[in-house]
Image 1 (spheres, rainbow, N blue to C red):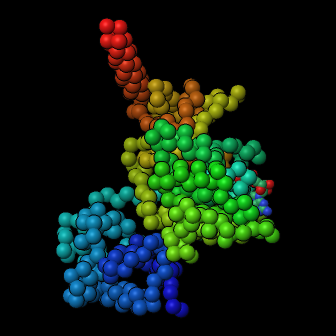
Image 2: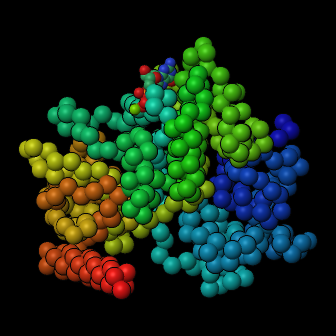
Image 3: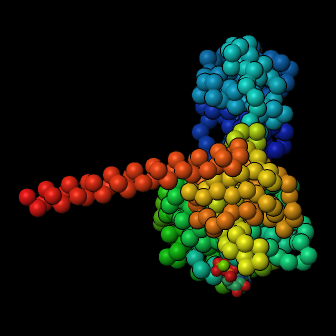
Length: 408
Ligand code: GDP
Ligand code: MG
C-alpha cells in the first residue's frame, strides 16, 4: 500500500473526483489524470482535510497556508468553479460550499442548476480491429432488448446503461461519421475510443483516428482489443503508442489504455468505467429546459415511412409535434423512436432519437433547431435562403470584378 490511484481513493473516501482534484490542487500536488497515483503521505493529508471539513472546520485549515485546501474552490478559477461546485448538488460536499459562502457570498447560491448529461462516445480505429464487435458486445450486455416487433431499427446510436450511469455510443463506427459531422462544425462526441487490435498494433487508420480525435480536442481512451488471441501483444501496442508521443499511464503518461476482448468480454466493464471517469472530469452538462438544439447523426429514406433522421439532442427537449429547422428545410415531428426502437414522446439532452417528419433527408452534421410554429420555421428558412443568395451574389460580383480587372 504505497501508491494509490486518485479515483480509487475518491471512491474509498466517498467523495467525487472533482473534489479530490480540488484538494490536490490546493495541496499543490501535481497529477495527470484521475488515474494518476499519489503517495501515501498525500493520502494521509487528504484524509485529514476531509475529516476537518466534515467537522465544519474549514476555517482552521485556512490558517497554516494561504492556499489551504479548504479555500481551493475560491482562488483557483474564481466564480466558474465556485458555482460549479455549488451546482454539483449532492455530489459537492456541503463544507466547501459553506466555506465559499462565507468568503464570497455572491458566488455561492448558484443560479438555476444545469444538470449533468450522459457522455456521447464514438469508436474509431483500423478496419477489422473490432469496432463493430465491441459495440455489439456492449449493446448485447448493456442494452435491454426492447425492439419494436422484433425489428432491429438502425438508429445510428444507442444508449448503454452501466453501473456508472448512461453512456451514449454513436453506432456508426468509422471516421466518416466523425469527419462529416465535424466538417460542418459540429462536435457530437465527447470521448473517442480508439480500438487497436493486440495482434496488429497501430495501422494507418489507427493513426488517422488518433489525429481526428486530437484535432477535435476530444479526450481519447485506447481499447487494446482481441487480447484473447494467443498472438496478442498488448505491450507492443503500448510501445508503438509511445512513439506517437501518446504515453500510456503505466509508462508514466496520461493516456488511458484498457485491454479488452470483444469476444470474451474481458475488460469491457473497465472500459465503461474509464468512460464514466473521463466524462465526470469533463463535467458534461446540458439544460433540458433551454431552447432545443441538436445535430443530425445520419438520415435515410425508408420507402414506406419516408425520411428517417437520427438526431442527437444536445440541449433542450424535443417533443412530438415540435417544428424543426435544418439548413433550408423544416419538418414537424410526427413520431420519435428511441435507440431501442420504442416510441417516445419527448427526449432530453444526450438522447439519440430517430425522427419521422422531415420532407427531405438532412445531411449528417447539420444543426437542428426548433421553431415555435410552422410560420416561424418558414421565416427562419426564408432568412437563411436569402442570406445564401446574398452570399452567392457577392461572390459572383467579385468574380466579375476580378475578370474585368484581368481583362484590362
Ligand atoms: P471492425 O472492422 O473494426 O468493425 O472489426 P469487426 O468488429 O468487424 O471485427 C473484425 C474481425 O475480428 C471479426 O472477424 C471479429 O469476429 C474479430 N474480432 C473482433 N473482436 C475480437 C476479439 O476481441 N477477439 C477475437 N478473437 N476476435 C475479434
Ligand atoms: Mg465494422
